[in-house]
Image (cartoon, rainbow, N blue to C red):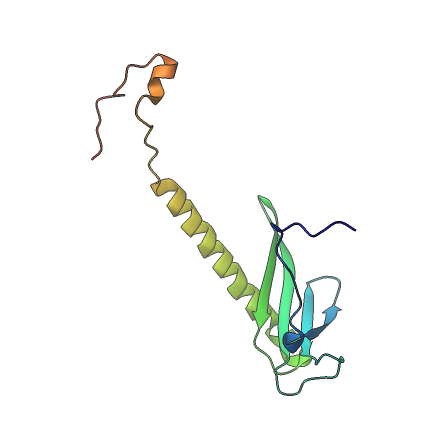
Length: 132
């Protein structure tokens, strides 16, 4: 057996934060994951809340857009009821994130390094526009 590579991370599970995951789906609109807190022996930990997460896929002109989101709920029935609104919120957040990324990409100014044009036969100093 070879010694572990010292450059690799040491990945361990935290036994105090374990959850059992149950997946429910209608095989059409999406899935709801119910994350039930458990202890080291798999017994339900009533000291921590049950978490609900939704997942769906939307068709866009650019292809399939997967959405994953939390659902604020106290039961599976309530999570199912709140699923449509949670999808809308997740989609709005994804759209805003895409807009922000587009704004950041558009605001980048690429300035060539000094002498970069010499390799292409362009004299040093580039064009006439100078940025401070």
